[in-house]
Image (cartoon, rainbow over all chains, first blue to last red):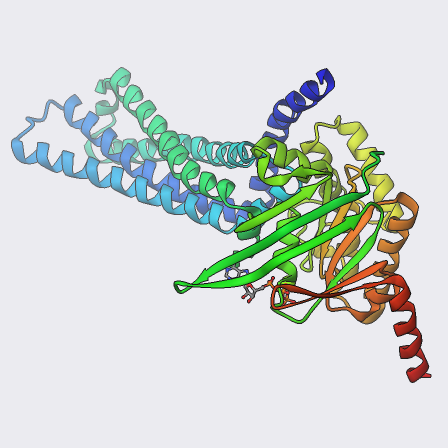
Length: 203
Length: 246
Ligand SMILES: Nc1ncnc2c1ncn2[C@@H]1O[C@H](COP(=O)(O)OP(=O)(O)OP(=O)(O)O)[C@@H](O)[C@H]1O
Ligand SMILES: [Mg+2]
């Protein structure tokens, strides 16, 4: 009985590092595919970061925030959020769905539903966080260059860096959070399917 | 080894699929007892319910009515964790389409079930190498499935099915995608494992080559067991067939 208990515990704990290892390897081996998935995330977050940096520049220049400008900013931020959400959801849904058969196979070999979900979440989060960080850096960087060239480099010095980095941090959190939600839904559905059904899925 | 005689028993086993609102009986009251160490072939025309039976016995899908007992345990009573435990250690699965994980090497594929069983990595790798040697792929440890022939991929799948020393190997048309000669080699390998390691083999198949090695053949049609032939009946049959051929 004690041995049984011990075994089952190991079955739960040991694969966590394995799940990470497999997730990492999946990203590396399907590098091309992973890049496409990741760029969906990257582009959404980059757009958001661009808008946020632009708003920071407006504040630094003490531009009078008219009602029209305010509405325009809100519209841009909303658009960027929508773009990120759709891009990320679409990327992650595709990348899980095309692997139903693999999920069915893993369950035949004794994987717990939890393991399958964990593996996809780790994989999604690795891509999501890296792509979000890159997206924030690229988006803000490009916009800063545009401001520097367009309105003079002195503007950059006047930026409220505390607020800007805080908001960019939020962008990254958002990217990670959206990736998490967009991964867990299909992964959970796949893991809950009877293996026979998952194995029948052909794409 | 447990003293109970039967590793698998099914009782009133039925499975219905809803197809456009109309129920279709893929399995109809199947009663089947399989003894420990037997080599059983399940034969029948396409659509007769072989794969459905395979899925029920393997705990890969749930029956509509009836029960499957594995080592006298009613599978319907198991929770998710116990079911995973059973799939991991008691049953090894072999598929017509091999179903190897494409991004993993032969050795990694074979080692995967040991990971799920909580076997330490070194031990798992050692076991994987040993099994790949048994199936004659000792030289191909680090090849990806895409770099192997169909027969070689099926050998990897067989090695993988043995990873945790299962009591039962369930195979669904293991030779279905292979040519005659390769199919024969796979059948010989399964028979060898059956004899040397005492593992019970249950194989759904169209392949008449399987008749030679089977202890029993279960013929199914339209989801029902039509007849069951024992080794003795089969010997006469095979004899007749050979007589006709020569
Ligand atoms: N998931 C499913 N949904 C609907 N119908 C199904 C499903 N699985 C099987 N069937 C039906 O059940 C019947 C038995 O199918 P099964 O796959 O068990 O046959 P089989 O004997 O394995 O055939 P084959 O030799 O072609 O593999 C068929 O009529 C099939 O259409
Ligand atoms: Mg079939």
